[in-house]
Length: 405
Image (cartoon, rainbow, N blue to C red; front, side, top):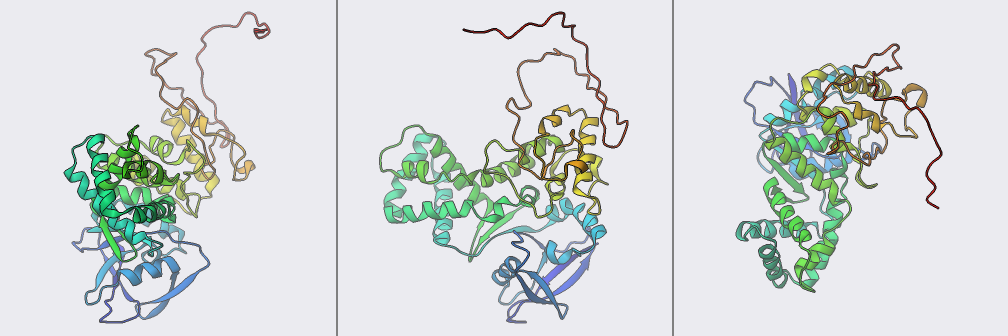
């Protein structure tokens, strides 16, 4: 069973008024699943739920005010209200159902927040770009040519405003939230709401494709819109959005899907210093990715909010080693965020900024040739791991390093 929230129309109540509806997961209810950023924990507002005052975050209140229909009630699944956040056992149970909840939603509504400076203009520009992708041939010359034509249509002044709005769009807190990765990936259809404007996921994806392709062209005309795209549409935080769009495409199209180890490597490790996803609860940096992995069944009992973050990370590290992912040891970086005494040295601290190993995990050189045997780990004590190695040779003599001078 899950709870759904019936958002009453403005005709029923000018203020926010809701009812809780209990339903079986097998029922044919048409509901929206809301994807949003909670915001800071300090700002609270109140709505009526079954006649009682219910405290919710300011960001959620803003979302509901924009989503409330004039004359039609709608059903939503919203984690902040539909899960008892004070009950760790219920949270653990409901988080394990997230895949089903988001996959079966009629639409996933991605609420980015209120309209900000020229964000409405940017959304309109995304729609224009999406239309052009459908018309243009799939070549950089054709795409940037169409973009150059659009410069006269949009105007230089508006282009400058659009590039500023694009930077703000990419820096919205929504894109930095770790839960968004799976919420976007699981959705059948996604509606992206930014203030009073709404676009479908396909529109954003098409616009993003044109922007990426235009950026990839080495030579564009001076003062052309292609040049504007290369220079202006290059916010560092663009990687947040690109990562989420890419993860959705890979989840929807790839078979078989990636195991949790690979999902975490691609989603949480940093190639640069600015694209770390965020979670208010450090355990969610693991829990929020588990619905998108191929080996989720192996972690069914893993989601437990009564377990400390250090223990969650330790159990995870042990499981990865048992699966043969010894490369996970490369994620053990220091200093830790968590208490070092609570976290063994062989356990990565996923609450911190973990940088991708320099060589990555795939190389053309294989010292073991075709040998595929993985070292079998043993755990003499809860905080100790023992790994078997392979004797390659014996060092007979050592000398000083070669002095080039």
